[in-house]
Length: 335
Ligand code: PHE
Image 1 (tube, rainbow, N blue to C red):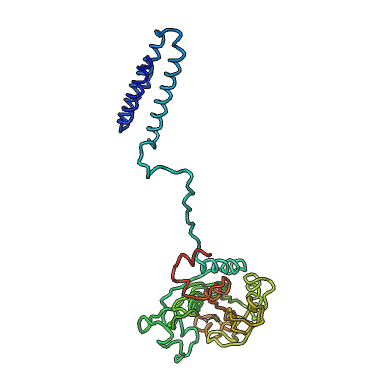
Image 2 (image 1 turned 180 degrees about the vertical axis):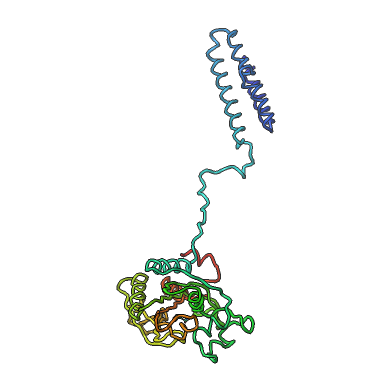
């Protein structure tokens, strides 16, 4: 009987190796492993064996049944044993990491700025990137011979269609659209025909702000922008306002913050000045109110505009503006 067991083991091994599809595997199971199968038959035959041999034979039979059952289960589960070596699963290998995407550094900075202004009661508005002379210049009180109207500085698409050079035309659109009070920020892309370098690019982003109502004063402007500076750059940031000129605001100012690299002593980043310019602002010029049909005797307001790239570069320590637009994952991965 020992011979029978050995023969059956060899047969089962061959048949299992030959069983190449589900149907063949099922018939293998019926022939060998089922209740009336060949292994069960041998168990039946055990009863007729001489009593003193039964324990040994039983042991062999049990071992046979276990081996065949295990080999069968393994093959049903995917037959890893039969696969070519190369595709064997090596469970000791470290897993492949999944690269999580992240928001673009400009988006991160812009989102933070938006949430600060929204918490101060500003809504969000936007306007077209292809503008006309009226919205980009005329309604904003630019004189007809202003240099920004030159082809050297502005991308003209046709005589009257151009890529907006700042987000200020959205002020005009918002005011023509609504009656005061108006309090909104207007983020978006702007375009300038400039020589491309580490500091300037033909495309960048601005965030415009506008607040118009009865009795809005320069101290509202200061309060709002100082609060923004404290929240965005930290409560101890020093700032200063310097008078400047914009056609669409009067009076106008540039705001500087103390250089956070050198603390005001002077370094490469601030070009030894100790101060960094972060935005332009001012009280809306009465001529602008006239062009949108607001009564300049009744309403006053302030506006401001800041470059997002510049602020992101200062904040994140990026020294070349072109990096934002190259989409190099070695750069983007760092944020
Ligand atoms: N539009 C101005 C610029 O592009 C910024 C600005 C906006 C200044 C609003 C004052 C008020 O430089």
